[in-house]
Length: 277
Image (tube, rainbow, N blue to C red):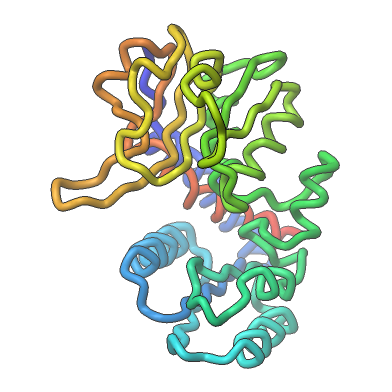
């Protein structure tokens, strides 16, 4: 059993990016990320702070647009349009969730594909579906980099994804298909879940339920990727019961220190890629 060290991997990715940013700056190209935060969701504020910190560390410029909870849709779209038009902005990120009276899909559609560093514009998703070069949503992108770094072969493997969100589950399935894995997506309406997860060579848990995946759901020698971040009074927990499950796995990611740092590193990678273009 090997623990996949996302923190260490993210650090080496960021170090490589730092020299990329230095080269770009010498050419007069300054990568800049604009982050839009609507309302005052506590978890979102934590994520946004980590993005700001990562940008500062790499020499990427950072602009934060804080908007009131009760902002109207047209005003939000106007702000996105303005950022689309600005030559100094390489990437635009709308931090989700946003208040319910706003249409997040319409907002994602409005972010131009060339600046869609979060990979949520339908054009980006469509290109991923067709296995074309595009911005890939940062969490699945980070997980793919983990497979690469640890030489985990995906060809012909049965990958089971728990969760069908637009942020992780769906783009993750496309990334795995593009690498010739056989993919099953499970969700709240799936019947006989345990029977399916037991067949997984690769199990990706992204449902947001503390310790949902137990050892009896995991096949011997499986690769287990835990995307869950569940904040409780006792601390931070993943979707996988790490201590009990790890003994059955060939590779497993911890929480914290697994997928989380990779998500931020891949966002930075996407911002630099956009600046280069």
